[in-house]
Image (cartoon, rainbow, N blue to C red):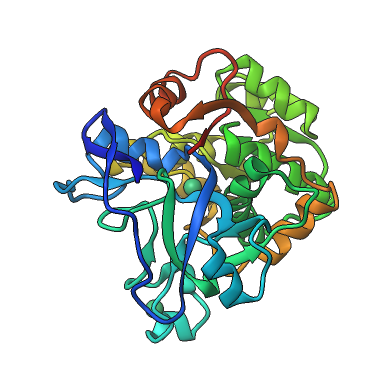
Amino acid sequence: MRAAVLQDIRNIRVTEIPTPTPKADDDVIVRVKAVGVCGSDLHSYLEGGTTGPTRINDPFVLGHEFSGNLIPESARKLGLSADALVAVDPAIPCGHCEWCHRGHTNLCPNVRFLGYAPHNGAMAEFVCVPQSAVHVVPETIDPAGAAILETLGVAIHATDLARPRLLESVAVLGCGPVGLLLVQLARLCGVGNIIAIDPVVARGQLACDLGADIACRSFAEVPEVTDGRGVDLVIEATDSSHGFEHAARCARIGGRAVIVGIPENNEYVLSGAESRRKGLSVKFSRRMPEVYPRAIALAQSGRVKLSPLATHSFSLDQAPAAFAQQVARENGIIKAIIYP
Ligand SMILES: [Zn+2]
Ligand SMILES: [Zn+2]
């Protein structure tokens, strides 16, 4: 089969690799219809296959936000029709460790995550997944939307951690796909003013279309639009080393911050006084536990809009171009979707 393989920094090659076959009894094979390029894929692409400290040397297939159809044999196994659209939760926690037992399946140290080295992902024609990871998607959600359910899951988990309160002020720092979903979820939670912050003007505008009240190009504008007070809650969804610091600068005294973004080069740049003197409460958000049923319900009911995020389409052969464009953030790109 064809697959987009990350070879090295900024080097993706679309090439022929062996088609996967079921290895365990509960494995099924998905024929991939749509796969999104995620911010974490960009870190792998720009920083050598990883979002952490270790450089990955062996090539692997990227892609963890995806949807598709089961091949006929797998569909029969699950009692589904072969044309049913399915989304796949890419995280496969071990289920046996203390942290899984405590409900922190998103923090399982033994997790197998599709599309994160060394596990091949979905920028390919086929991918092998355990049947427990498969979620049937209603017809009202299209393949790109079904792929973005994974991104929505990340935003749902961050919102669960943030516990937004009625009418409090919220800043969403970074209006990429996760930020735009965070804005929509904050609106649903009944918060007050939502300030969307992104240096790309079109992203701030889109955030306002999706529920934000004010768009700022920089965190530095927040004192001005809050009469010097800062906001009650900041949710950070940038890819910058300065995201944490900027979140601290936006928050009010005694405020809260939830850090969702993965910083470039695995590093936060943070001065101590700002967070300390404000007595901030900070939470870090990582991936998500079991949230697919809620993600599907939010999308199906129209409470959260996914289609405005799927701005650019590419074939599998165009995967290198999809990554280059996503990195450049030009032409109004929010999320590149690859259709293998
Ligand atoms: Zn992702
Ligand atoms: Zn575990």
